[in-house]
Amino acid sequence: MAVNVQITHNLVKAYVFWLGQRNAYQAVMDGKLFNPAEALAVGLVDEVVPMEDVLPRAEKKMQQYLRANRNILVNTKAVLRRDWLEGLREGSENAMKKTEEVWWSDEVRQQMKMFKAMLQSKKAVSQ
Image (cartoon, rainbow, N blue to C red; front, side, top):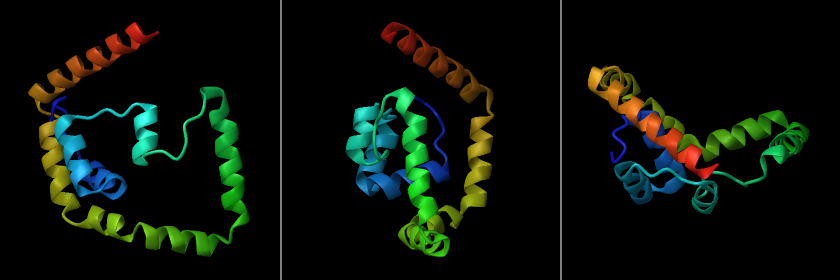
């Protein structure tokens, strides 16, 4: 809310899954933007590596998954994420319509332009 960006049903459900109900609520209401260290600390990412190491690390992880039995891997991930996936289906069509109405309003488009400019200015200052 703090950044005046419409949060989608799916993003809220993802935050609840990864952060827990209370922490997700607080992050959304505060408009929390996680830096890499914070994202790692709360479990949104598995690791933080220098940019040049991203592709080799991803390839290494993918090789690990490719060695696993595909059916077991897919079924295990589905079981682990069942509540999240079911939550995405609940009311998602109506939620998407509401999100689209807000997202494409002139007021929100203007706010998004200002938010983008603010992020770009922060990026320029940090470089």
